[in-house]
Length: 416
Image (cartoon, rainbow, N blue to C red; front, side):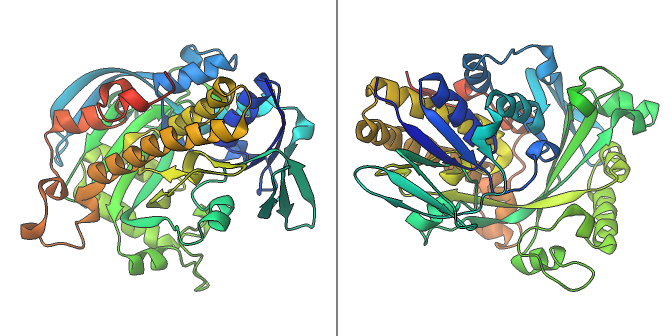
């Protein structure tokens, strides 16, 4: 099979999946990451899917009980703290770094380049060149944009395509298991909890502790609270104590103390006491604005987009990492099927993964519709999805559902 050299822009999970899978079929690969330091300190809790585990196994990663915390129960609380529904599940909840570390370690150190700010590319029939802000350039046969939601690769190709703000944010934070009072620890830590006042969406779930420790007593609990926020309020949230607005995101330590107090007071007024107590235990909460984005195409000439650079679904489906893995796997399988014919492989990749990505975006919008509409539409104008308050068992079943259980996604999840 004909091989070549791939330039991968973005060194997070999508880029690492692609890099390691390409190396397995004989490609030379270099990864260029904008951030200057190792990414292992970043990331938060994530849901997992069997399809992502299949890709990891293909790369030789051992999947066992150390991969995350096995959750067997989902519990739905009313706002007074009463359990009103439960659902038996068998899922692993894990952390982003648990997958970053082994994927990064697979790649030779000399092929992963930190602090490389991609600016543009130029391509010809013979190859493609990537240019970086420090004046350096790299030549290859294929360029993969795996540089996330604000992709510089996508922006050169489709400058008009911008992520759309969904109308809400996600407050997040983690609590060490040892920091819980014993009674609260027993009730919250081992399970996946839900609490949904009107227009809000709160969940907690266990993730591995320091050094990927999954033992009882060493775990962490992650909370995620989806909360409607106007664009004006988002700017205020992203403004530090000096009055500087940091755009649509701000470093956790720069969030103004009064905003954290305001968040905790609101949590106490909205959610089950057990969940509000959990929020109060978080030492450094942070938030992220929720966006989605759909690219008109994801392959062009010698350029391919994957992961969040291609399509960004809202996080309620819990498949951001899984989609990146499947995008990378499909691209490699398309190259194998086309016997290295890059043009044919990218045409196949574009058609199939664009369909999958667009449906992931649609599903995220459906799951988050009740929060998007909360501040923008009076109740009498909202659709049933926008009114929200689906039955507790449906809510718990839909969150992070297995791809094989989603009719719109199962048939196109991966190359057959």
